[in-house]
Length: 223
Image (cartoon, rainbow, N blue to C red; front, side, top):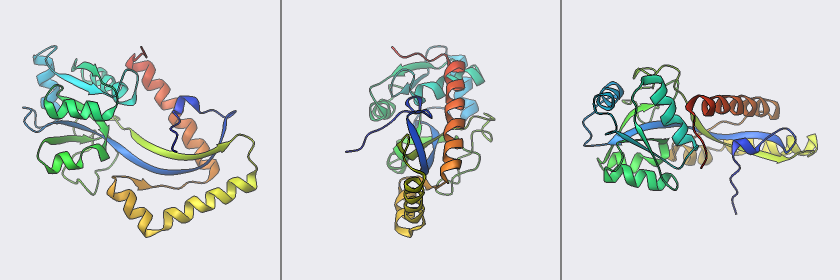
């Protein structure tokens, strides 16, 4: 059984970071037939038609919602938030044309891009992705600093001995060095990115601070 732990549930009193495992960027997607070929055109259309351009999310105060509101704040687009029960429902709404934009992790989209039903307007990463080299970064598309990624980290209960943490970290690094594992990650649009326990702790603290600030700025609230 896999259990998902949200970043707001992690603190130094509960867990000891072992290693970052994988990471992958969010992307901005629109339906293939939507009359906006880039971010600037999407923003201009949303401004010109207030209330007519919606963005879907996986629910209130989820990363998809927060990122959409951050884009609204940065551009003044005024896109209307439409929450759904999970990313698959938001993607289904995008395919049906019920919403005009969704920001989600890249692995949600390759099949829909290949089928010609979705276009990607930007990658929320500092560099373009090798697997979709024609898609600009958010900065290139006119959204400087608009970057976000999803990631997986292995953690242990607080108080786990240092020797056990080192053993687990070594195992993660060995897996990440395996070509089959890296290929599997790549097929999912992810990169294997093992870090030391100390580096993982610093990464976790930075992400917690960054997303807390994003929540504050976006104004997103849980129902």
